[in-house]
Length: 130
Image 1 (cartoon, rainbow, N blue to C red):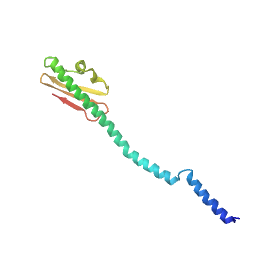
Image 2: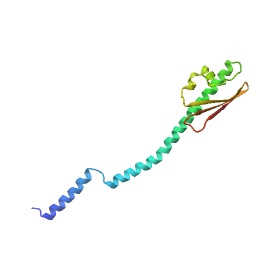
Image 3: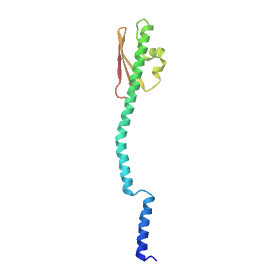
Image 4: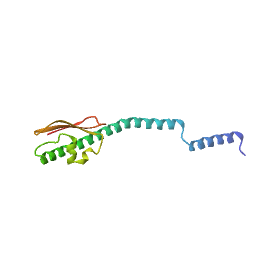
């Protein structure tokens, strides 16, 4: 038969082996949480920069469409550029699809125009001239 010391050793060894199977230890959890926190700290600023760049890309796209619409307006209206957004919308109704896109008309005459296109969330507006 087993003596008491052998039985106690056996029970302690089996308890340690069984407790390892049921979950993670506290140091393991802390290390994993630390790794996740470091990854999150690195990812969040990049995601915010991506959003700003996406808004600026929308503004650039709207500026390119406005430039094409201005050229069409010039051709259709005897060499006169559009002086406001309403006139441009007669050429291209899709210019106002995004309400956060703003069009500011500067100098407009028969020799050229200046227009600033921006997004409410973007940083750098786009200046369109001709």
